[in-house]
Amino acid sequence: MSSRTFRPDPTFYPSPSMAQSAPRETLAYVVEIDATGRTPDALVVLDLDPSSPTYAQEVGRLDMPNLGDELHHFGWNACSAALCPTMPHPHVERRYLLVPGLRSSRLYIIDIKPDPRQPTIHKIIEPQELEAKTGYSRPHTVHCGPDAVYMNALGSPSGDGPGGIFVLDHTTFDIKGAWEKNRGPQHLSYDFWWHLGHDTMLTSEWGTPNMVEQGLNPEILLAGGYGHSLHVWNMRTREHVKTLDLGAEQQMVLELRPAHDPRQTYGFVGVVTSLADLSASVWLWHLDGTEWKIQKVIEVPAEPADPADLPPLLQGFGAVPPLITDINLSLDDQFLYVSCWGTGELRQYDVSNPFEPRLAGSVHLGGIVRRTGHPRSDEPLTGGPQMVEVSRDGQRVYVTNSLYASWDDQFYPAGIRGWAAKLDVQPGGGLTLDPDFLVDFGEKRAHQVRLQGGDASSDSFCYPNP
Image (tube, rainbow, N blue to C red; front, top):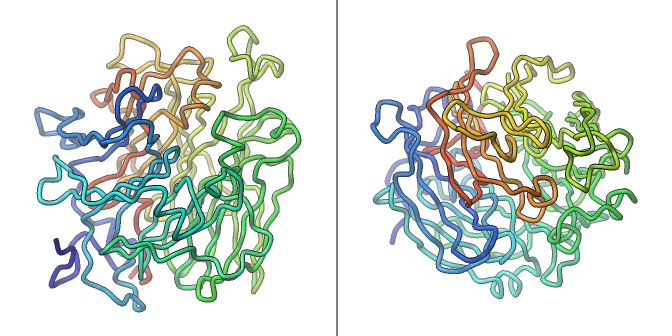
């Protein structure tokens, strides 16, 4: 089955400003997890057309053929990066979603064509093949690059490190192998992204599978053993260039969001928590002359709480940590969205000046203590805004509430009922909750959202804004 076209895919755009004029999304794909492992995880299709009678409802799904995958992050086989001058195969098609199982190490290639509402499995890569060809396991982040699909993995098949990146052909999905030629001191892995016009890749750190799969390990945390660094790489030579250490106090350096404008050499990364005071933070990396540097630009403090309202893991602290678990940057590079999964808050910052972000909006949903409800729900919400996705025009923001099953159970021990919500962005800044959009996944859990045709975290651009 061909995945090539005779002209560039119409969902590809040379620059981020051109992508902002793309048609409004009408479908979303959400990974749905059964934390008990008794039924398969699924890829659920949601109707996002407000004029449709099935708006904010499930209109399609694909159940996986295996149990216990724990689907997590996923992404497209091809995107606007295919228009880069160095792209050797410009007529690839945004047709397949690569959906890895973070716990099973199995990788599903999902075809959303010819019926986007009824996706089908095109290919399955079993963990043994991934191990044999890369030495990695627990695949995590997916990015469509100019020449291939790049994915990373948390560690080795034994559950230890190192984690790293591997590459697949974006038409045949044959694994080409591990990406790194010289990893230097890099050992932990979580996210990766790049500045294509500057031949630079950044990678972040969480922990090896053995450090995270059974839940947050307090001993490792208090010892500062989770990731606290970024790594700078030369994309052309695939060699480690520099470590940007935030300090062992800063634990779990997760989601990376570089500026979309390819002329810019900065980006943001979220840090889950500080050992000093349970605050969470966002840091800015930037190129200063010829040297990559990093500095904290946002800090969200922990909120005092009655220990009786807290899970056992937090009762000794008497506070609920914000837990910044995801961030997302609008295509115009103006607004940064920050998920505070612990306090149940989605923050919007104006980052027009990336060195001095300004809080522009905030909405509460769920939260360990607040448990803020939604107009369409009779019960308080469990979990909090976690994965966040922004439409290409920057006017709509979608959030889901599950982090990772074993971690969900520690921070929300009463259980998480999966949901997805939508927020509308006000002109010039500010957020309002769409009272008509709440998708209830019941006892299943919702992780990441991808928007049909692309979104603010799926594409890379090589041409500057006009």
